[in-house]
Every structure is written in C-alpha cells, then in structure tokens.
Amino acid sequence: MSRTRLRRVLGGAASAGPVACAIAWVTAPLTWTGYNPWRQDLSTLSTLAAPWPWITVSGELLLSVGILGLATGLAITLAGRDVLVGVAMLVTTGLAIAAQAVAREDCDTGLAACAAREEAGLVSWHHSLHGYAAVLSFVTVLAAPIVLARPFRSQPAWHNLAAYSVGTTVAGLVLLVAYVAVPDTWTGLAQRLFVTVPVAWTAVVGARLVRLPGAGTPFGVRTTDPVGDESAIRPADRRRRHHGPA
Image 1 (cartoon, one colour):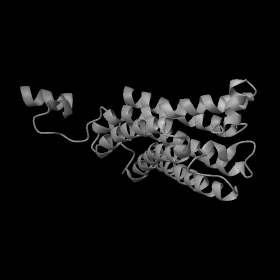
Image 2 (cartoon, rainbow, N blue to C red):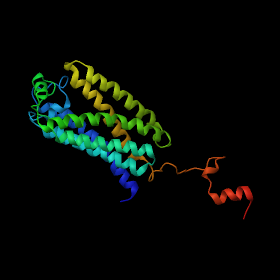
Image 3 (cartoon, helix red, strand yellow):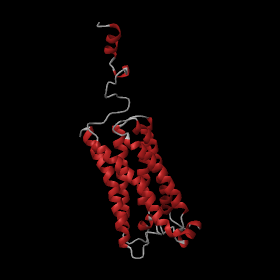
Image 4 (tube, one colour):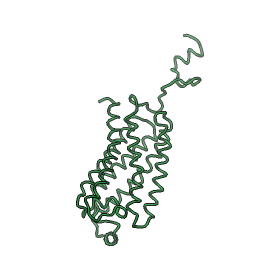
C-alpha cells in the first residue's frame, strides 16, 4: 500500500471513529428506560447495571481506533518535534479511551450510593481503572490540539486548522470546568458538550488527511522556490549564481 493510500485510510478511520461513537452515545440511552441523559453521564451507559453496555463499549472502542488512526496518519505525513509530542498525546488518549471502555464501572457515580461505595473502597479494580483512564484521556485529548497547532500553522495545507486547534483546547477546557462545576442535574449534558469538542476535532483533522493531495510534505522540505530565498536553491545552482558557470 502506498503512503498516500495509507494516509487516506487512516484519515478515514479517524473521521469514522467519532461518528460511530456519537451514534452509540445517541442509541444507547434509548435501550434503558429511566436513563436521564441530562443528569447521568455517558459512562453510566456501560456500567454493570446497563442493559446494553456493548453499544457504548463498541462505540468508544471505535473512537479509540479512530484516534490511534489519526495519530498514525499525522506521524507518517508530518514531521517535527511538536508533531511527535502531539502524536504521543493522541496515542495516549486512544489507549486510555480503550481502557475506560473495557474497564466498566460498577455503578452510576452520580448516585450517592455509588459515591459511598467508592469512599468505602467497595468498588472493583476495573471501576477505579475506568476513572483513572477517563481523567488521563480528558487531559491528553485537550492538550494534543494546541500542541499540534504550531506545526499546523507552518504548513500551507494545514494552516487553517491551527486556529481551530487552539480553539478546541480553549473551548474544551472551559467546558471541562463547567462539567465539574455544574449541579448534578446537568452533569450529563455538560459532559456531552465537553466531549463533543475534541471528538469533532478528531473527525475534522482526519478528513484533512483524506483530502490532502499526494503523499504530504514533511516539515523542513521546501516545495517552492521563493524569490530571494536561497535556502530553496540547490548548492550547485547557488555556486553558479555567485561565481558563474564552472
């Protein structure tokens, strides 16, 4: 498979994963009578008490695959230290989301009874792992866009995604604070608004990978010969310009 085709496949996965996860998040509440999406968060849909947990688990695993696909696509298309850092954060996000999807919670953490079980240490190891993985994914999925904004700004084909990436991190942080601070009756809505921001960013950047022409240009490789910029001229041609023909 050529690099261009591989990039497009990875970009397609990066766009499809968030869409599949969103469908799961919309469908799963319909299977649980009494579930309140305004108050209860998304993780409740995959607890041990959920009637159809596999819907949410499958959706989040597909989101994980999409984010890992995005990380791989960026790694083979772009170059630079910031890209490596951003890719590492995306890989961490993808793995953390997979871990939280598989490590299901015992109960709805929004309920007082579940909170009491947590305080008493009566929850399972996978309940605790879910919480730690969720926090890790929240942090890294918000950090990756702003880290990648700088290299995006340096490339013409990616330039218009730089401001969007910064806005994703800023908006995500604001909504994350709102998610933590809102009353319990609005927790579910606040979480859904928060997760929509980085998930949408993943799909948008994945679509850019699909639409890029050719194999992409790594950082540091000049594709044009700007007037007056001798850094884009081959050494032999530069010698001829200064000293005449050999």
